[in-house]
Image 1: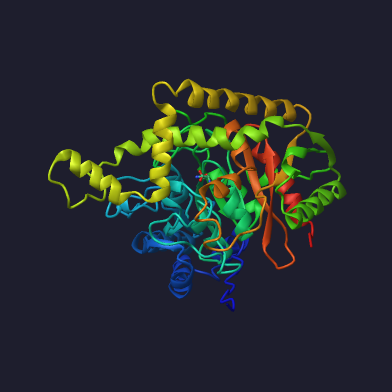
Image 2 (image 1 turned 30 degrees about the vertical axis):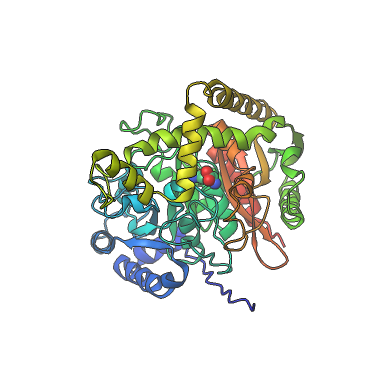
Length: 486
Ligand code: GLN
């Protein structure tokens, strides 16, 4: 069959360029927002990135920014910046589907903390972005509203679960976006679409207003076209929130300034376990060029050992599904969204609403998680997984005693074709091998574009750093971004 693949790649302007335009009066925030809505109208029917638009709110915010600029008032950090929000984060009065039919029609009565913080910093929130149902997936094919297409090659998946968030930046349907990452859902789609994606340390960004998947793993983070802009966004959304007891009171550094610092003298760890069997040779070659670029910039490279990596997939898929089975118990047809018309008795209403409202992957995980937590199996599965999780975290801490950052491929393979893995859940899970480890350990990381395959598919490098060392990860990612990797 002849390929019908097309490319919709377009690089958004940098935050600095947008700001200069607003300050000089050359651009108006309202015109900018309107131009983004025009692009969305033209391209979204093909790529299926936005699930809903928040036009009224966006245009009111843009008008407010224009009024500030007209008065010559100081402009906040993200003044007029068009941003898209993954549809697992709530915005007051706007649909919040989490990619699921079960939340159809639900309109939350409040804003997620990261949403309020973005808006307080002047961002213009364009709308809600497609994702895998309840953020469960690695290809966006689990969305009840249809898959997102990769803007680099429309026959391919954008990655998941934040596929809409990555594809929006890659196709300039937003300057930056928010995603969520539980086991790789920001880093892997960023890798597949050739953009920057940030996994902040657990506790760095409030989860208030994030529809929960696995609460001990869930994180909110930014995606952008370059490292410095992603760092700026993280600075805006990070910080303690009294509404999220797991959010950290640690002060928020100036991440953009951190990302400007040179890398000479930094120690970079390379774990052999991430360059073993199953790694695509073209991905390996691109990452090796990225490592050579870091050496050329004055970093020392040394091996580190992370031997528990081989247990990471089963550990992650036990912890994540166990927590998901508890978190998703609240969707009962009573409190939110979809209710089955077949509701003769209360029990029938619960059963039919959940059966009709949840997709196959979500059901698989609820069953798996419920089983892992059940009496008689708890010690063998859930407890064991928690023990291995601790070992993985300790292993990373030992490694970070010797190195400042660890670099790996983000995904063992380049973006695959739509439908290629969707019938094989295990193959899909196994491809998460390089991202779930940092999720289990609670550490931070960044995906930075690092060359391409011979057919032009993006390759992403994952830069990991110890808890609350996002600045270090940004510095290293910036050095890779600035090197030419071909
Ligand atoms: N792909 C992983 C999963 O399906 C990670 C998802 C995520 O980070 N939300 O669970």
